[in-house]
Image (cartoon, rainbow, N blue to C red):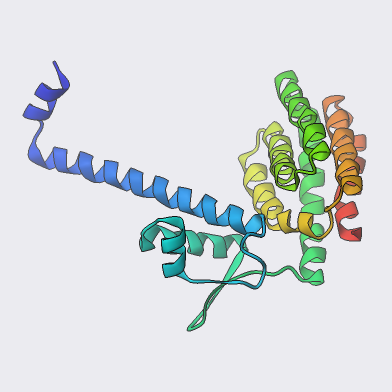
Length: 230
C-alpha cells in the first residue's frame, strides 16, 4: 500500500490528530532552538549580566515569533540564568561572590560522587572519547579561543556524568555546570589559566580511567576549588 492510499483510507479525525502531533513536535523543536540560542548568548556574555531583555526586541533580533521566545525565557529563569521581574521585564542574572561560593559548595559533593561512580563504571570507549575531547583543547588554547574552551569544558563534565550511567547525575551536574559557565569570563580569561584548567581536566580523566576513585576525588576537588580562588 502506498502512502497516498494510506492517507486516502485513514479516517479524517486520525489525519487531524497526526497533523496536530506533527505541529506540536515542530513547536517543541523551535522552542528548544530558541532556548539554546538565547542561552548561549548569555553564557558567552553577548547578553551581559544585568542587561534587560525585551521579548519583542528578541523576536526581531533573532527572527522568531513571540511564543517560543517567551517559553525559552521561562526555561532560562528555571535554569537560574535570568530573572523575570514583574512590570519591569527580563534581566540577565549577574553572579555575586556569594553566588560563586554557593555554586562551588553545591557542585563539590555532587561531582565528587560523580567521579567516584565514573571511575567504577566507565567503559574503555568512554575513556577514549574523553581523551579525544581533551586533545582538542591545545589548538583552542593556542588560538586563545575562550568560547571553544567553554564548550569543551561543558562536553568534558557532561561526559564524566554520562560515565556514571545515572541520568540524575547528567541532569543535576549539567544544570549546576551551566550556571557556572560565566566563571570563565571572570576566573579563566588568559592562556595561563586555560593551561591550568586543562591540566586539571587531564588529571581527572587519568584518575577516572585508571579506576582510581581516591585520585579522581582529589583531582575534581582541586579543580572546583581552583575556580573559587580566582
